[in-house]
Length: 333
Image 1 (cartoon, helix red, strand yellow):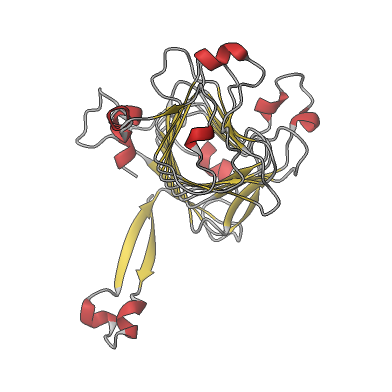
Image 2 (cartoon, rainbow, N blue to C red):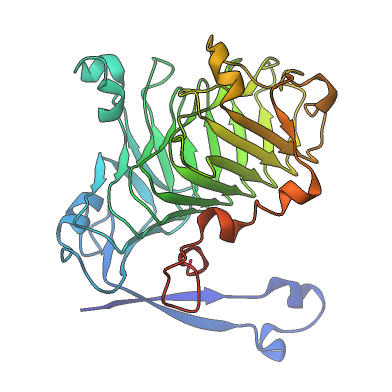
């Protein structure tokens, strides 16, 4: 049975202007339909996010919308491959918090322990995460993922991704869309081989280190693309690289972003891989701020021309040529 939640929208601006909301017809009640409600207080269908996911139908035809009420949900959450078309929608990004504290040494499963650490793992296609805080609370103890995405057509909207090293693993051969998100970390805190588009996000460094570590496949047209983002840092941070290549075909581009003075003038590092200098694609276009010093960037990075910029549309980066609806997948959120 579908659950209905009423959201009251009141226009205070009208009151300040001496008009009542009714006069402007802005005092509206919007009914939103959800398939399940999760609440720590026991007034929903489930008290656990994972329990709600586990109760959904496998491979559904339609989107399954799960509403998560404010609360701190201390649990590891997995959206498995057989749970596509799932939406996790929080009541508010500041107060709907999913948190756990696994890290590399705690997992202790050998050299690949990092990939067992995520607080939230998305392994299913066509998933939406919205209005959530997703946190790895282990502290500055090495590799510890908050959000891991290994699927395609996954949208993360208005979320906070909190952690230190390896906060976000954006991987798989899929396409990921991040919009209006806050992403923080220390070292390589955005890494992986996905094609990912970051739109109007805040990218926040907590220590002197590296922001990105892309492992873009050789035949991929795009890797990580940051559009109109704010790149800032803690007050005591002053030596940060935009990226280094986890694999030698890494692709990362920053477009019209605002960069703080913590970004090193050379911008990029080759991770002691000289061969990467001829194989990576690190680019920028009309960034601004004290951290944008195009004349001092490493010689093997690129300042895009207007003609090259035309290639970097969201449709080119994330679009699906085989889509059958009027909208592209990233326009449905």
